[in-house]
Image (tube, rainbow, N blue to C red; front, side, top):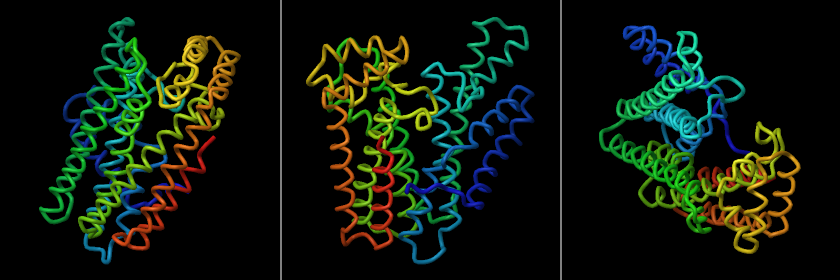
Length: 350
């Protein structure tokens, strides 16, 4: 099972960072105070996967509690980093709702309308607020790592991990958007690279390596762990792609097949187009018209063999993780963690 972070000390670390933002914001005017409140709401909820990976990886490597406080700060930083990406992603996707309620941009659209603005002005304020909220969260994530109670050399390495996570994820997001608007469909390899960059580094590799680093892992252990964690992140995203195409309403939080209705160019679609490009393109073009067309698109993807091949790719990727879990560079607890994560991801396959 994939771990979830329910540690009250972690919640205190996250709440402390959000409280600092609010304390500064109220001094800078009512609009900025409202933005801080919206940021706080955006940062609550969710499974807290990334901070859990920091703390569980730290526990898997540590021999004492010397960096316990730093581990909580870094874990909180990865949660705020995730929130920043989610807030910015909603702007990119023109979404104004999340989990059934207005997101940051949605809240400020309503605020603008309450102030008498028209649709264009409301959209402008909503997008501006969401972009600024994400910027503030990114800053706070960096601040938490920079202020972590650890030695200077470890702090520098942590900042390098965070820097890499942000840059690689931004590259993946840009490639994803470019793939969606290009007239030429991306290759399977291009979509796999995009999936890896969007998710694997900031969601798995960086938080797990950060926790291990604080726990005292040496260079070889960090290398082995980083490679395995990257594979976990890729498999996690590929499972998400399957859920987006074939998952139940309970799994997606929306009607079945949201990725098909949005005609997302995922590795699953790239695999299907290798054997049935014309049929796939036609089915996906119609999928947005309703549930019957979604079911037809699902049938086309199934008959192309793409779903079966995607499941095989996920299983192959996770088997490589399980093999890495036995590497002598890793302590037994780290190997156990990798196997647990691999099993949890495999268990999500729809």
